[in-house]
Length: 199
Image (cartoon, rainbow, N blue to C red; front, side):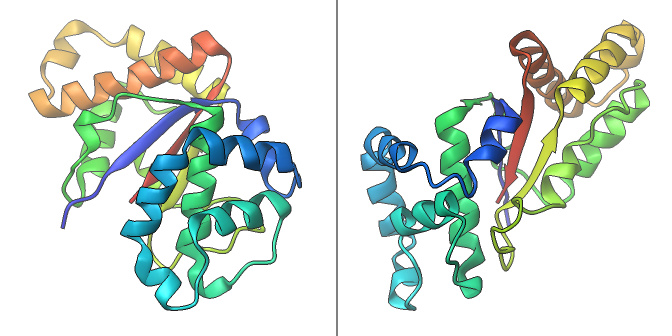
């Protein structure tokens, strides 16, 4: 089975603040900007509606309103949170992580640690869930964050690593690590953090 990691440079406070904000203007703007994408998403997940679960528009409304939620369909609310992140953030290059095999995140983390980057770990994006009160998904999407300070420190650690140490990494691992450090550099430049969704 293959997986994907999608990351965004985003103001994490703004992202968190959207949950339970009851900001109807935000909901309408998300619906307008992503109208076709949301329609395609609903088609892809039509089985959820067949089971009595929410469509993506209703899920986005529930996340912005802070509920009510149907705990049996936590994945839809997780994806709703991802659309909110898509609205507020800037998607990052993720070709090294989409598609990917099981265990790839841990492999990249080993490579980062080998050159002295310990401030961030990509497997953090596969270990957590969207913030409360959003119900936990049955499986995916998982969610994680790197703070602006963690990104700054990781970028400094990468810059301090020797070229020889980086060259010693497996080529695919090195390219994936370079992508991660590009996310950090973009976050530092923007004064923001990184949010990631594993699915």
